[in-house]
Every structure is written in C-alpha cells, then in structure tokens.
Image: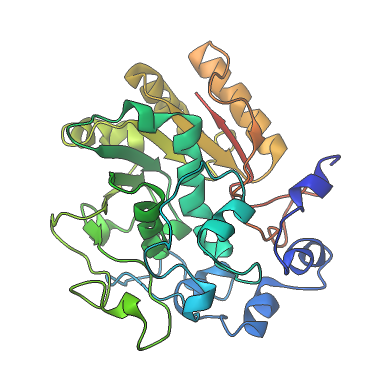
Length: 326
C-alpha cells in the first residue's frame, strides 16, 4: 500500500483518469474508451467487460487496426532504429514519436513486457548468431489471443532478429490448437493513404502456414507440462514468459514449475499486485528448493497504465504490474 503512489505514476496525460479515478469509480474502462471512440472497437473491445471473451470468440482473422490516426499509433517502421535500452513508457513514446495522450500503451503492455523480460534475462546476448532468432515460450495467454497483432511491434524492438513465440495454455480454443501465425506488418492506423497500408503484400495480418517473417507464432491448447515435449522438438526456448500468471492461485502451475526447473531455462513471470507476486515467488522457491535468481520481485515499468477495475483486493492492481523470475 505504501507503493500505491509509485504504481499510479505514469507519464501520460490520461494517467489520473486511468488510475486514481478508476480506483475511486469516478471513471470506468467503458467510459474511458467511449470518450476516445474506442469502446467495442477492434482490439479495444476486449479492454472492458462488454467485450467478447476468448472462449466465445471464433475469429480466425487477426485484428490488425489501431482505430487511431497515424500520429497516435506505431503503424510504420520507427523513424530512427532503437539505440538504447528502453526503461519506461516515456522512453518508448519518445523513440516512437508518440504524444503522451496516445492510449496505445493500454494494448502494448503485453509486447513491452516481453521486451522487458528479454532485457532482464539478457537473452539477446545468447542468441545464436547464425540463426538470429529468439525462441520464446509464452504460457497461459488469455486476452492476448484476441490482441495478437500488437506483438508485431517486437519487429521494431528487435531489428534484424526473428522472434518466434509458442503460446501455450488452456484458454487457447480447441479449433486454434496448432495454428501458425505470421505477423508481416505493423498494426494499421485508420488513414487510407498512410504508408502502413502499402508496407505489406497483404492489407491485413493473416493466419499463415510457415512463411518467413519477423514475428511468428504457434498456438497450443493445454498445460505446458503436458505439451512441452512435442513443442521443444521444433522450438527449444531461450526464455519462458508467463504474464499475469497467478502461480499461487492455480495448482496446475506446480508441475509446470517442475518442468521449467528441469529444462534449466530462464523464466520471467508477472502478476497483478505485489502480494500475488510474493506468494508466487514463495511457491516457486518451495517447488525448486532454491531462491529466485532473476529477477527478484520488482515493479514492471511497462505495466498496463490503467488500474484493474472492480478488483477483489484493496491493493493497487495493474495488468503485468510486478515481474519476477527463476
């Protein structure tokens, strides 16, 4: 609770509206999106309780529109290649030449948390120079499955490196098990004459079958400890990531933690609040019989800049709020 002010601290012009006013129920996620004409639109429709759930979604098409003008979203190649390690949303917005009233951080926290996890685990130093490829096993995806196009930004964050992600979890719909996805362009803006519309040989991000691209994905339904043996035959991970993992809340994590320990691969987890992260860290230590190594529980600078609505806890809660690793 002493950290509440730090957790609410973001550089955006809408920070008070999205944090304190949401916590005090003066603003809702719906009203926030409505004022920006983003309510129930594209990828934004999953940011409030009005939107479709993963379980009820039957869309094969990847939603690839920001529903914003080009000045408010990263729809094209960055003006200057990334040259520093980004340490905050302010760093990212300055690099991508975005104004601080742009709401894209509400969707890009998944992608920037992956970026942050790779930096914490210093994975880029160990990437095989001949393949120039990072393999990530991403566990327990849920809402992300309906916002996958946002991960195309990893192309800008890791230029010259192909990022491949294996997404594994029980929320993956059965009909999407084994689906391969190619992200061949950035998420588009709304402007018809913007260069983002001509930067790809296809106007939308489509389900593909093995075409080469900067960011590739494959979906797997089930628990990681049940599926990992078949997955590692094609893709052994440099890093394992689990966003908003809830390790202490779900007993199904215990055999997965054992599996990760045996694989001897770095893993970075996130959770909604410090107490959940602390309980998770205790669970991991008890299963592995060793203390956390990389990193200890710490605040994620790329947490979603909007407070969790109607939380059951009277604690500061944000999506991807705290990170820790083994």
